[in-house]
Length: 345
Image (tube, rainbow, N blue to C red; front, side):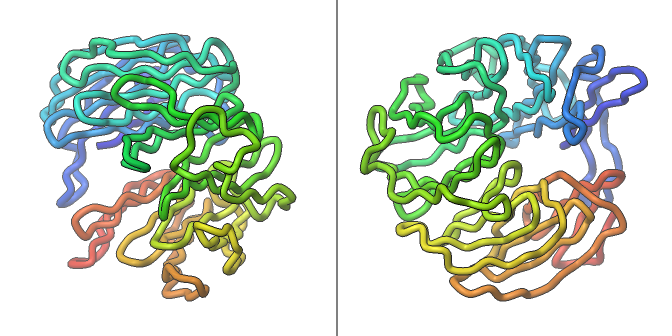
């Protein structure tokens, strides 16, 4: 499943492709609306659909209203709701996150920011949490079991926060350390890993046992403040594998940090520009550049390049992995690369 937009008509689309051969099985116009203002590297269909194998949920912007719609796997609409306004000079990119019976959306924006949870089956609002500041950010929440409770962690709105996804109740909050966020957090070995890139660059390890306002407390396991632009990411999200965090900067420096200590194990320059997030699969990292190159790097405390591959066109989208297939969306095509067959496009 993927989203798209026909800019000439303003149609925002949801498409279902055959995994076997890439044929479009069905295509639905979710809404038709004027094109919103956006950043030059954003799109009018940046939200990623979410599915539980029975239904799927998708979000778009209709003028100033966030629209969330639920479809069955045959393309029949089940419900649609507008959980609130969303104002951002850089456009829309709020992907639905599924947790138990809820679909959760991040409404960080330049107006009244919020998090909202809707009932998956009906779209009924279950809870809403006001965000502390009015600043656009684009972080997809991470939901994990950590320190004996379920934590939904995200950065944005000039802070880093953890919530109970069942109720929207705040577990802990860190003021700052910067203004705007895109990359999601990751978690391993009792540490949440944060990378930021606008207007300041930070890398930080936060203990998952945190409670209350943790600004300037021992809940911060480690913090790299004096960073050059090459050493932290603004847009690409990191990954966690075992004892280590991995992050690729927007300018192509891939780095490995020890999770518990923050020690830099290694850094390696790869591409010129990177917007897609890292992918970890089968003990390896997939690192893709805007130009269409993908590096396969073995996860571990030493840099080890396994392979480098190039497609004919560039991409901002992060790769998806499922059942032995690697799905890549470039600027003009969708590719399926399988370990069991030749590449399909």
